[in-house]
Length: 122
Image (tube, rainbow, N blue to C red; front, side, top):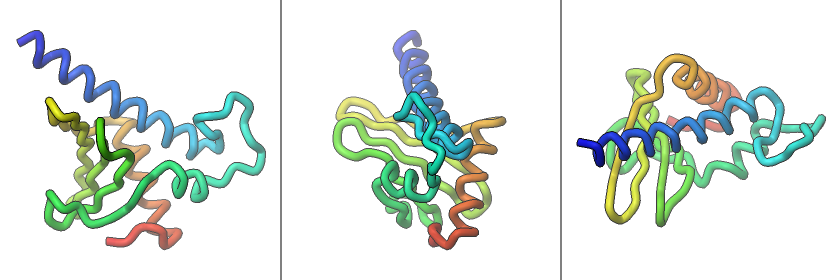
């Protein structure tokens, strides 16, 4: 049981790191810079940060926001019913979790913003 709890903690922490990056970017700060850039552009940051936005090959009707691939890989899936799931996998494990509370709201806002800007295709 302890091994399962460690895995759950790992995926929760990885998702929290990703959500934090999005939250900082939405607030106008590049998460990789110590001093905020006054000319920060969220859409440019998003284009550099996310590898692809595409139909999720594993979840019919969902849109996948691919963040990394290989070892490890991670992505968010946005479902038509409003559900969002974070997936994290390595060669030896595959985990998922759903953002809740403010984390969910941050990701929902990202999706809404990108739809409004025409950068999100469903």
